[in-house]
Image 1 (cartoon, rainbow, N blue to C red):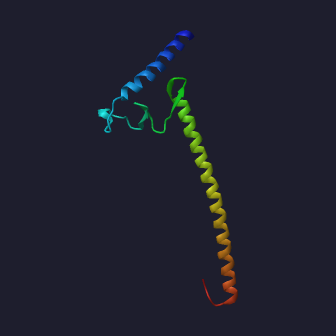
Image 2: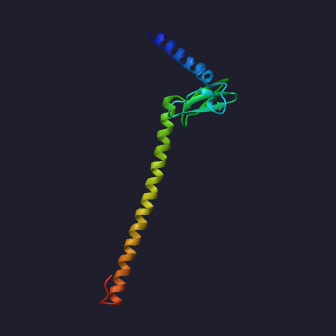
Length: 122
């Protein structure tokens, strides 16, 4: 049973590898009448165009061009998102500190202003 599943998976992968490039070849600047599904893009590799998810990558393994798997794509996207969130969190922390400093400075200025002019209100 396991051998059959392995053979089926291998056949699916091979059909995707061979059908995807032929699906997109010989296109002109207007995509040659090929409709690209939403969220997909064409990556040119030599004379062949391959339809991949936006931001997807191709890699060369030996003499074969492989499309990034869904797991690799999702993992890379989550890693990119995690990096951006970490960067945003650091920026927010800096801005919170600056806001705290500004509030402290305004409070000090108000105290100094009321000490100099007891009748003035701010």
